[in-house]
Image 1 (cartoon, one colour):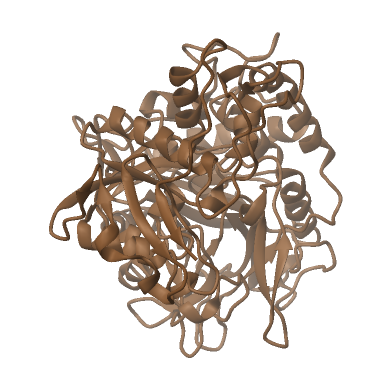
Image 2 (cartoon, rainbow, N blue to C red):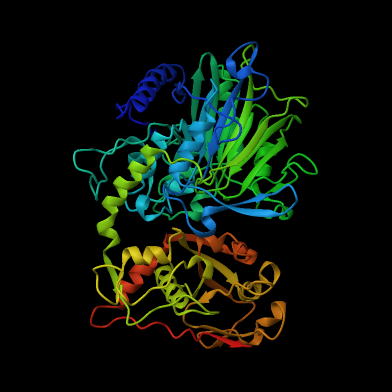
Length: 621
């Protein structure tokens, strides 16, 4: 079983946390080999912007039979230390008049400030995360195997985290190193005189076991303790992790049913005298269509949990009533719901979107006599998502961390990855840069599956042109890694899925119908896919069905095609729900790496790559 090292951390706060956790863990191991206990001072407010001093019934001050425990949580951070850009850096907020406002959000400098301000005034506060803290990360974190992100999580006071599927991207051994510390086995240490120290918080994965021994490969549970208050945490990732992670990443591991695992470890915690239990579940749901993606929609209208669907709803409805609250993730959606347990008692089910744009504040009313969370019809669990605004002060320690790692990344950012003979723009219905990226993704997909036949790239994921003129000292026509990153900054993965010809035609129609009818989103095609787009028509009829060909052959509605798209599209993003209906999914590498590899393999200083002609879609206007 993986266990975080109990080595001393730099800095007084992290050292104190680690020493306390070491002593508590030793005692817990003597009782039950998988239970851990620790204490951490903390506090909070209800707005997330430093304006309050607690809420509820005054229990936060520790008087009387009950106390309010503040649970702060987030999920799917994906190494976004710097403020994410584009749509990935915004959240939608419903206004009192029914309109919606887009708000810039995210960045660990602001997340740290938000969490620290939220803790003020609360004697009992615990901070948890529900998986995918790392993986598919931007350059500043991904380049260094996400060590910067773990250091940031240590600094902002994370107490416990469940793992997600992306924690297994680089395999079990690398996950163990990320938790325990030490230099990377191939890349070594990144900073002189300082060894990476690992996570100051436990990673949990109760439903992931070694195929040979049947033992959990990570701690299944963790018990947070403070002044007589005990709350147990169980961490599970989605059972389907092997379907969306490379085979190498999950080699030798078994992933088990979420409900069965939660029920099992809830019983174990109760046998050890822990009655208050929170589940960290890296599986999620989808808001009702009427929500429009707003983080503050009413998830419990017209009935508790009616505004949410998907796997998390089934998990929440089926898991033992001993679990008092769910912190979830994976779908990158915002919600704060109240879903009744199997006994009909209300409990909160939350998700804070992704990339550190939101955090969730949940009030758990703890009964000192029973040791359980109070959940009755008259005292509902209270949970709400809060925006990580960018108009608040930055946390200086996080700014320093970003500056340190950016300085180390700079030489890599200047590294040449290819050569172009002219500007490669991104504008227009079909763009040269869009075609170039799609070609690169298809080439990458074929290294994973020789049967890959085409790739489609969403235009919104292309954030800048590739210019012929030098941006620095590299020289004209040279494409640097930093320039490539500016083009594709979202750290998506290149995913493979199987679609029938009929489904593929429906995907093309969704470019100009449904959610995209008023504002078409034309997917950029790889070489070999051609069709006619008739803009004189309306809706789905704009795609001329009989014109669609792959490598010169008409599209066969009954045939199966292997299609490469980025992970955003694979989840049905940008109004392409049919892409989420594909079968035999396979998750590949980073989309920027795919572009870089393609440019490197197909260009040189003596033979630069010419911009594609952007003539794969025939447009009739």
